Length: 621
Image (cartoon, rainbow, N blue to C red):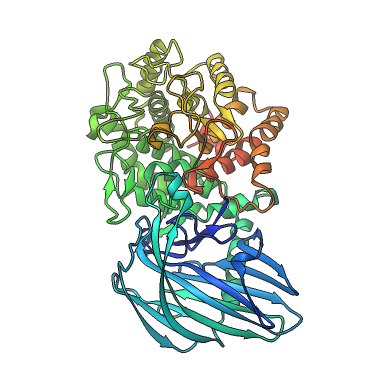
């Protein structure tokens, strides 16, 4: 069952199915970040709407509606002479969720709206009577004070009559049950807002944690429409990109005085690796260079012993540094940012951080990350993007010398060599990069996933050897890798994480095994389509006919499945076998970002304005 998402730039969201049904404990009409972008708390699960026509009462959940998405999620009802459009939106930067009811009617009708309340961490469930609520009537509404958190939820509906009540009801979440997760939850039906409607009009049901609310709700709606349209206009991209560009905004969130990225909805927080892989698609191809700079500056402040954090924990925002690739992606992202902006001042500001990363990898840092005698990077298990851990067991350990880490290491050294010349600094990196290249190629005599262990498991990681700006393998080998990846791993929604020929391959994410076993052992990841498309077009010499082929074969089929009411969201993962059922988060930052980036930069060949300066063999100082 398809789901929609609406966000507010703080990490808060509203999300339900296309039929406005709760199929997951992560669903709700107001899931608020209490300390952006962390501490997400469900306050409003849903609202039960009943329509009074003459002497009959009908529940909207029993009436078949038609979902649509035009900047906001809406459900349209056409029933017994009533045409109703129910739209949900969140004003940017505020913990407010608004339901807009817009009608065309021929005779007077009335509505009863019954809010369904909860009060819990968004990944928990509520047991019966886990908390109590106090209801305090206010003008045109009610204040709800849950006993388990010091927050007040205001519910407002102008020109209505509110009758308080309290009724607990057990919810069963089908999606969570399928995931073998906790799925039985209790919610409170609080009371009824009764409102008469005499003529065609619109009105707004407000759920807010804010002390003050602009009472001109129509202006809030129009302001949010204008903001979204301006975001797209700022990108300067053709209209075909509008849905994906607007979708990117869901992930960019406030963090202190800066910016960060929510890795995915519903349950991810801000992750370093995900942020960096996403950054070009979210901020650079969309023309939001100030946000890119703010994100890079924010991560710089958390760089510790040459390591960029892997994740900031949701409830306490503590940084965890269990990643070997985030720091190398960071150097790559700075390079991509410079290709779009030529921001030499920022390069000077950030140089010491970039240098500290290379020094840490070269001489050794945490998690047994160090440059070995062969000049390749060695690391502990579970530090690459295939990082699942079950107790003490790693389904995809990939230590010590994962192939994409070596690709990123060489790429980072070449970037640093270029940037050193641009900055008028000593180039300590070019000679070292040549040694890395020589030693890598002497060992990479087959398509290994992990170099020193001679692991021949065919995975998508070797596509990074081709996709980065500075590949260290020859053109013939690049062509071979792209061809074999296309034959074995490419699907309609992305790349499989393991060839179906492998005995460890899991064609379904859910089965008679822990789902994390399948996470990187066959499950399809859309974000990988980005580096694949870049690699495919690169080995085809950027010819127009092959760029056209790439769109028609690698993106268009996916867009066709998503359909005309698609909101630009792309799932985190899909099953490895047909029909490729969507799994995981309903909207993932790097899925959206890499599909958009590859479409813009690689297929449409809309290049960064300063690309030739930074990629040329002769650097202009």
